[in-house]
Image (cartoon, rainbow, N blue to C red; front, top):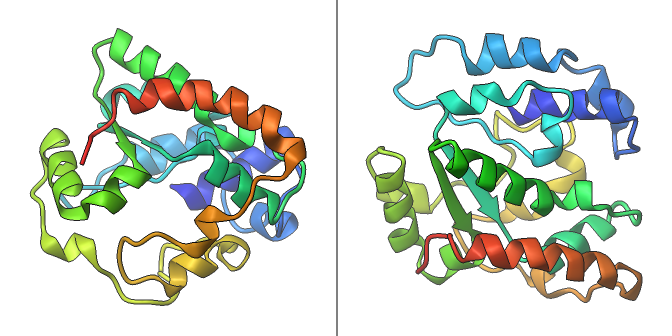
Length: 209
């Protein structure tokens, strides 16, 4: 789902993004059509996984979330902001997504809809334990094959992979990346402090190692 919704976001917001024209030309631009035909369509597998980012939800009817088992994947916003700043210096709260994640958590839990919070640092502490707990929460069997994967590009990668996925393509399992400790540019400190208030609230509800 990421491959479809990234360029929908670009079309609606007009935000500048690496590879923007290539992304816009690659796939369907009507977000609600993508949701109906792809996410709510029929599948020949028991589990269909859709990776989203919160800014993909722009101009979309969010009612489809009621038919999903939702996982809010959070990460220390300092790491997210520092990562974005390597490619786009004008990082915004919309890019970080943590405020929207907190909004979604309140919305989903308030309506008694499924919502599990998963923190990246907790996975790194104990991958098997945390993923086992996650699988139980979303009613799918855990398999140790989930803990490792081959290096290189993946069939599901979008055309933007060359701008963002270098570290992912080099990885073979859950391990801390050296780039996760890079310093936060001083001018982005206010954004980090604001983001951290939402992150701290979500972290309280996350699966712990």
